[in-house]
Length: 115
Length: 108
Image (cartoon, rainbow over all chains, first blue to last red; front, top):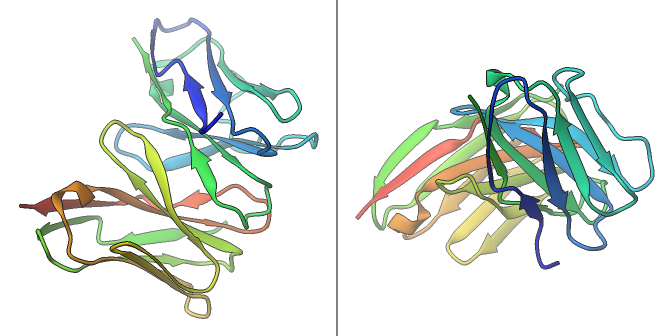
């Protein structure tokens, strides 16, 4: 597609439920990143996929968070047993290659509210 | 871990003023990014630079690798420039480390 597509754009869920967020990167972009931005705070790194390499999961805040990506296509971020502190905007970005030398294209984000 | 600091945190200016936002980082990088975030959360990548200076329209970004410092300038500022401007740095294939952002408000 022309840009990075994320869905849903907004999600309200009850505490304790599982949620799945989707990111569709730009075709051909081998690198895909998930970031989180809680209200009033800066962006935090969550997880990074580069091609078929093992993902860098060092930013995932707890074992309730997991993400998958099949090849160089769609990625899903799953949050199990959601907590109120999980409320945030979850942003996905993709890049031509994960070398730090190419620009990033960000999606519009998924605003998650846990009530 | 790279520490990224931006200044000022908040900036209010009159339309037409020249704007400067600064970013400093603590560890050598391969690239620095300037991002723009409008209300509602959408993020747009403005610049990626590893040396020197880049210009796009009324926006200019400079970087001094030796001093680990970058500036984003906006000439002839306009109310539509009102947004949060975020500096982010990366090294190699590592994920970006973000500054906390500068909230810019341009008053007509």
